[in-house]
Image (tube, rainbow, N blue to C red; front, top):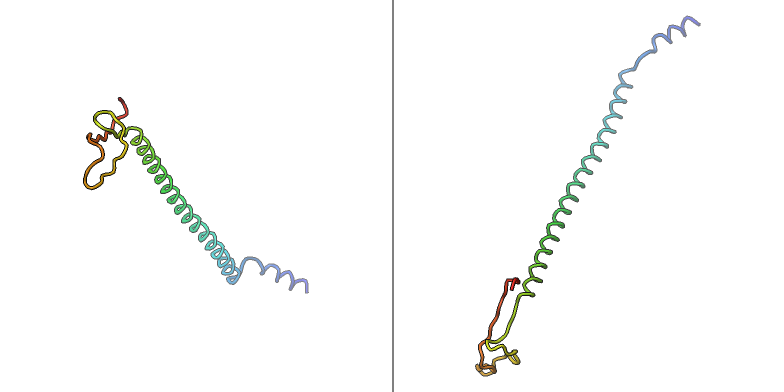
Length: 111
């Protein structure tokens, strides 16, 4: 009886083909899950980065437009040639209520 169990123990070393196939299948499933996670994370990062870049460029454009509008409003003047303020600039019956010419001036901001 002892001889039979010793012989059985000696022949039971190593992996069978079924055990090897099962181990490879488990590794393949785990690798597929990890690869899917990495791919989706990479796509999410790319989309987020792209959206962030567009938002920053849009904000910069609006800031430039705001600066241009503020600077334009600082350098506008509207008046008459004789320096009088304009009291009523609405034309009635194709006649202007003011006899002087109107001036619209845009200065460079230096003067």
